[in-house]
Length: 403
Ligand SMILES: *[C@@H]1O[C@H](CO)[C@@H](O)[C@H](O)[C@H]1NC(C)=O
Ligand SMILES: *[C@@H]1O[C@H](CO)[C@@H](O)[C@H](O)[C@H]1NC(C)=O
Ligand SMILES: *[C@@H]1O[C@H](CO)[C@@H](O)[C@H](O)[C@H]1NC(C)=O
Ligand SMILES: *[C@@H]1O[C@H](CO)[C@@H](O)[C@H](O)[C@H]1NC(C)=O
Ligand SMILES: *[C@@H]1O[C@H](CO)[C@@H](O)[C@H](O)[C@H]1NC(C)=O
Ligand SMILES: *[C@@H]1O[C@H](CO)[C@@H](O)[C@H](O)[C@H]1NC(C)=O
Ligand SMILES: *[C@@H]1O[C@H](CO)[C@@H](O)[C@H](O)[C@H]1NC(C)=O
Ligand SMILES: *[C@@H]1O[C@H](CO)[C@@H](O)[C@H](O)[C@H]1NC(C)=O
Ligand SMILES: *[C@@H]1O[C@H](CO)[C@@H](O)[C@H](O)[C@H]1NC(C)=O
Ligand SMILES: *[C@@H]1O[C@H](CO)[C@@H](O)[C@H](O)[C@H]1NC(C)=O
Ligand SMILES: *[C@@H]1O[C@H](CO)[C@@H](O)[C@H](O)[C@H]1NC(C)=O
Image (cartoon, helix red, strand yellow):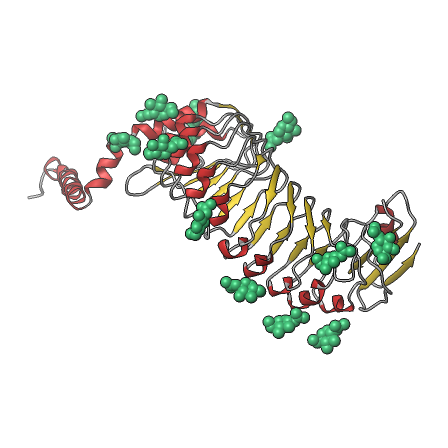
């Protein structure tokens, strides 16, 4: 009574087909978008990526060879798609030594949230078409060798939070339109070759936490109320430009400030005496300006800095500071780097602290434009010492030198 094998054999495969069929239908009815998306992937994204690839002249790691039609573009290296729509949400090609230009087709990746092309050798302009990326949150374009102006269309990036175009060769003005982006928190525009002033509406962007325009050719004065209009500022870097006039008193109202670098500009006048109200201050660089007026009030602000319990670096070098160095400086207990050279600071220096080394360099014309230079350092890690002296210091933690 054994059944013929040929009658039994088909069952499993029939069952299988049947089961698979049912299973497919139930998936289709429950989650139709999953099945549909594989069939109707957005051609615009695929074409945009291929056009992007076509503008890359060199790809030494061969990353873009995976960008071919043997697999869905969502699996191409550096590409991430949204699960639901299968649209490109992230393009991360950071640090791959790519050269070539940025295709304007990148502006058609309309679901893009992250574009990171930093640390490559890209040249040419930032395509104005990128302004249509309404969902873009992060745009990292530097270091590269990009040129041309920052397109006005970036003001249309209404979701943008981080815009980083540092270490390029961007020219022209900072576009006013950046001030329209109410979500912007990080704006890093230097080093570049930008000219003009910072548009006044940028100083009104209360969302900003990092404003860095160091190493450009920008000028102008800082608005008197800057610390009130940028209350969330943590990093303020405008070094190596041509900013002038005084440090606004309201700076102390930006109470989250951690790093302030206004070095190598043309600031004059006195440093706000209550600068130490910025209790989170970690680095303060005022060097290479015209601050102070060779008077006995010039360093009064140093006393307040003892309230900055994280202050690690302070440079006052190359200014017009007079005054006796206040002994309260020893109360900035976290200070590692202190630079006072090329001022008219005077006073009797003693070894206040076990880790303090103080160096007086008198009449060394090779180093100084003035009669006397004073370097003071803690923990022997100051960077602007002549090489020779650094090696002489060796591992000594406490040292007093008169040369
Ligand atoms: C693909 O995306 C573009 C731009 O977002 C849109 O205009 C087009 O309708 C989409 N096509 C499909 C098939 O979804
Ligand atoms: C296409 O991409 C796949 C990986 O996605 C890769 O294995 C293959 O070598 C690529 N083909 C070509 C012709 O580069
Ligand atoms: C994408 O962008 C290019 C260049 O910016 C444009 O010519 C093209 O019409 C756009 N649209 C599609 C669907 O590719
Ligand atoms: C930019 O170009 C210069 C020479 O023109 C080159 O030395 C430098 O490495 C390039 N930078 C990048 C990030 O490719
Ligand atoms: C910004 O977007 C608006 C509306 O889409 C458009 O009219 C305008 O031309 C865009 N601006 C720039 C500079 O692209
Ligand atoms: C900055 O904001 C203040 C108050 O909202 C406003 O009065 C002023 O016109 C704004 N300035 C700029 C340049 O947008
Ligand atoms: C700004 O700071 C000054 C001095 O630190 C203080 O007197 C003033 O009340 C502050 N203003 C605001 C609006 O917080
Ligand atoms: C130096 O500046 C202080 C504070 O601004 C001022 O009171 C003093 O008169 C100035 N002294 C000289 C010599 O300019
Ligand atoms: C600074 O003031 C001191 C004492 O008043 C004076 O000897 C010195 O020449 C002044 N230096 C400068 C550069 O004005
Ligand atoms: C440190 O801060 C406290 C509280 O804000 C203040 O009373 C004190 O005067 C400050 N000390 C110095 C040296 O400025
Ligand atoms: C350093 O701070 C302590 C405690 O606040 C104070 O007693 C001392 O006088 C200060 N030292 C100097 C040199 O101001």
